[in-house]
Structure formats: structure tokens, C-alpha cells
Length: 301
Image (spheres, rainbow, N blue to C red):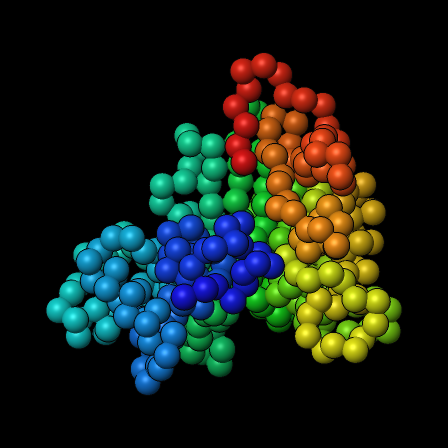
């Protein structure tokens, strides 16, 4: 079963949805919500069967959810929640197996739960929002990865993170913009030429470090509004302004290195930070915008 984001986002143009369980693709969160859903058909039913099988087997899967959300289903399958908690990561937690000792730690922002009229309600259950910190010598490089989400969800994440005094988990050197450059991640109003983000989303983008890289995993940015679907040029114009203000770069996957001949986008993370590798079109030459690392320094890609 092919992932619907291929070839726009997936680094492996032949990646399958079952592979997403293994590789941690942001699309995987939508698959994992299927575990407790009923009356699914077609591909969704196939994916649910695979996810349930892996969870029952106790391997080959990581569920991003409040653990209690799966309690009833596990009990119906003759399993105990405590026996599967090691496979479940709640929002506000680090993903097991990734820590400073092996060069990267990954913090889960979403899916999360919030109190609405006194009731705990699950939010953004169909998309992961992760914050990765890469360690290379003394250098920390921070990467925000976001699937399909809206400005309302991002606003809640900013407020929850601030309430826990955990703002460092929203700092970034690389930002994977939401939903293929949709304006809905910034504001409900698209704007004529540029989308002006709501206050908390603007604050989030203000956390970008000098030289930051903003990536839109999307088709070529249009120069008109003929298509209602993303990418939206108004959102792209906001991201371009952010990149300019931090002396960084805004790059679109299907425009890289040129829209007529796109190629895989490679960002190298080393002791000097994040570097977008640039290919001289037609020459087969790769160059970077930063000085080459010292001999013997470990690079994380």
C-alpha cells in the first residue's frame, strides 16, 4: 500500500504505509488512530489489521497516544495495559531509544489531550508533532517535524509548552512546515498576498535560530489561487519572510534544486549546525553553505 505522501515527502519514493510504522513518518499517527476505530474498509482496514497485530505481538510499532485511550481495547484482546506501555509514548515525553548518548533525542508534542469544559479531550489525533534535538560535539541542532495540523492545535501546543516552562522544546534550526504549506496552519484567513499568523504561531516561528532552514514538503508553490488545495502562496510568503529575517532559507521539496528536475533534499547536521546541501544543476557538484567539518567529527544525517 503506497503512502499518499509519496513522492512529495517520503525520502524513499517506494516507501509503503507499513514502512511508516518502522520509519516514524508523521503520517503514521493517522494510521495508529485506526487501532481503536471500527467499521473501516479497504486500505484502512488492512492498515488497522497490521497495527493491531504488531501491538498484540508487542513489537515493531510505537503508538503515540494517552495510554489509557488503549486500555479498553487491550483488555478486550486479553492484554494488560502495563504489558504494552513500553510501546506507547504520550505527549510531553521523550521517545525511548533516542537520547543524547546516541546523538539524538525526540520529544513528542502531539497527539495530546486538553481539558474542555472540565473534560479531557484528545487533540490532533491524526498527526504527529515532534521536536528532535541532534547532538554533535557541543552543538545542538533542533528540528520541528509537523504533519497535517492547524493553527488552533499549534496555539494549544505553544500554550501547554509555556505552562510547563519547556520553551526549549519549541526552539528550532530546521522547521518542517505543516500540511504541505497550507495557510490553515497559520490562520483561518488566507490573506491577499501573505498569511498573517495568529499570535502564538507567530511566536513559534520567532523561536527560529539564525541561519534556520524552513522546509515545505509540497508541490511547487503556485503564483495564483486557482487551486484551493495546498501549497498556498500566501503561506509561503510568510515563511519566506521568516527565513529572510533569520538569514536562513525557505526551500520547497518539489522545487529543489529546480522544479523541472527535483531531487532529494539533504540536510547535513554537524558541529557547525544544519546545512542544506546544494547541487549545481547539470554539473553534478554538491556544495554547502558552511565550512567543512573538522577531521574525525561525527556527522548525523
